[in-house]
Image (cartoon, rainbow, N blue to C red; front, side, top):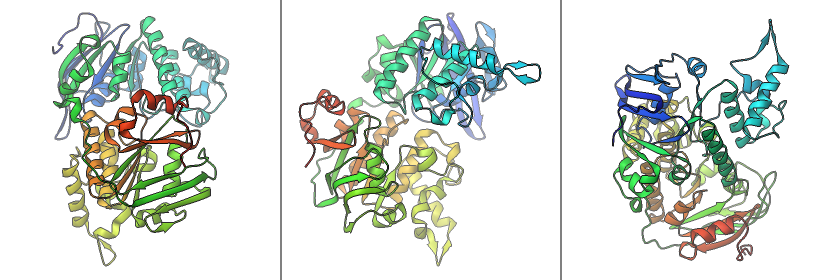
Length: 508
């Protein structure tokens, strides 16, 4: 049922309306969060989840509607106001200052002073106490944040919220860059925080994780609250139609495909300065080959070496008629395209427009005698905006203004515009909603049917099993086993990824 007023709410949003010009982001959204619970917020990219959370965190001010915290009117004008009231947002793109020390980051914005001077002893004590409360005694306080792992940086962000006295935490895609071990550690931490009365809003597109950690979930669609339920009362399969109106079985697209001649052949490829030890594989036209493996197993280094972003020290790479290692600019011209797992720093230029990003690797296609033709560029962009259902005002919209899922669609549209023969996809569905995932799977299927080829890295085993023709496993820099998808079960794949399967002979 749709929720109006929750008498048990610690934090309540009622009938929230937010518009950005002609774009309506929220239209009567209602949400409540109770003390000692994890409440998941679900919906497609563009459904209004991020906007609603930004309202709660003081980043965006609503045009109408009301907020209350502990039964008292709550109207933060800035994120600092929200933190002072006890509400902190932990963003998907972690917001630490990379050059500052751990203790300086924990105190950032609320630094303890001794007269006109920074009280470093109190700052260190506060950071140490917050990290100890989270069960971590290993992070060195004098280390710059840039030297921490992703999971450690996340702990520092949570410690900052705790040190500033926040009892409400908003977590946006907290597991998107974590391996399974770190995910389980985070869930243990969230259960600990719950038991101590903290209230946590949890945004994630990994639905299985939501059902593992959340108590309740609320679905937003087109800026409106659709339904709120206890997780225990609804299955994942029942929740998906609430978000997109489609059954889970319709997510995956795998047509009857026939593989052709080899398009990509690797023979014992080693990375010069990476975790890639040796990799041997053959990818044929008309085929989708999935690479499973733990974070740090060398998966990303594999596709980066193929695309020329990382140097190789040994082995051979043959793509189409080109043998050897080539830099990215050459790979684009040869017909290979990479969708990086880090779309913000590598995949897109976020301050440029959708149109500029889309045509950048093949700008000559929208030029006449060396002159860029704005109409040709916009026509090309509009074609892919329509085909991929990219939610944006048009080709002139900046990448920064788009949701994460729509940014990912632009990155994929660029590969399609360039008409590449080989798609190298590194975590292509990370941080995108169920409907967008289904669209990406459909594009992959169409690419393979057209006689091209896809090499996809994914940490999400169901999508590998649902979309690929073959799945290879990477373990400690080596491709150790490859089978057709029909030969794998999810359990066997998990064992192989962990290096615990019997069949772990290196691919010949």
